[in-house]
Structure formats: C-alpha cells, structure tokens
Image (cartoon, rainbow, N blue to C red; front, top):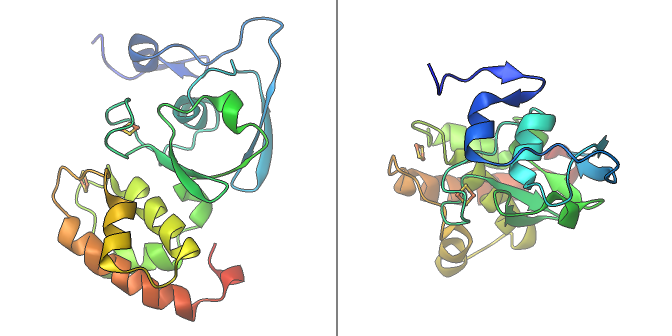
Length: 186
Ligand code: FES
Ligand code: FES
C-alpha cells in the first residue's frame, strides 16, 4: 500500500511524500545539536525542520506532526527552556542550544506524574506538547495564575477534548514541582 510506513536507509516512505528529506547535500556542513543533554553531530541540511531531525535521525518520536504550520502545538519542544514549534524551526537555528524533548523528562518529572494522576491523555497525540508547555511555564513561574496558564497553553489543540483534565493536572503539577528539588525533576 502506497502510504504504508516502511523505512529505507533511515527515512520513511511516508516522510518522503510529505516533507523534504533532511539529509544534507554532499559537502554541506554538519550540524551540532544538544538534545536532552547529549551532543549529536548530524549530516543534515541547516534548513531541515527540527521535528524531522528529531524523529527521523534521532528516533525521538515524542514530538508529533499535526499541522506543520505552527498552529496545533503537537510538535512542541523546549529550546533553552522556551517552547518552540519544531515543525517550522530550522535545525540550523538551534545548533548548539539546549533542546529538550518529552523523552528528556525521564518519565518521573512532576508534570508527567501530575498528568498520570489526573489520567489526562486519551489518544495522547497532543500530550507531549501540552506537557512541555507546562514544564516551561512552571520552570519560569512556579505559581502562575489562570491568565498565565491560559497564555502558556493557548494554541495547544487537543482533538480529544482533554482540556479540563489538563487544567487539573497543571494545578497538581504546581504542587508537585514545589515539593520536588530541581535536581530530581528529570
Ligand atoms: S505540527 Fe507543529 S504546530 Fe502543529
Ligand atoms: S489526547 Fe488526543 S489529541 Fe489530545
């Protein structure tokens, strides 16, 4: 079947249909990325989108492809602690900067624990973006008001309508973040 996901030399057929290859042209400079504390030197074009480099080259598939035009938030990752939309971010623009994906939270981060306690996800597609936006918010402001929470999560769309559970999880995460020393947060 045409759209069946198969892999060839590290690049899926599906990715070749919908977005340009990330591999560099011969002789192009390598790109240095710092992802979840690990340094990677990659043979990719500087203008390749960060989302596909994370997913296709580094097999970090937590960030998802939703809209591809910076609208839905499914592809969100953190760059130097701030949320960015990886689907429109050129990998060359974040070379050498600290990139954090949901995998880098380690699974026991207070925000992840809050998400589990409140049983937030349904299909899960939007959730890594929602979680990372919340991590960025609470690391910058441990006691955000409703307005700040709205601003941080605006533009993170959930087709399953988990918004009320997300809101409860953000409040639980605020408490857990305060109880968890920074070094133990993942
Ligand atoms: S896939 Fe990037 S914002 Fe929707
Ligand atoms: S949990 Fe399904 S899109 Fe949000």
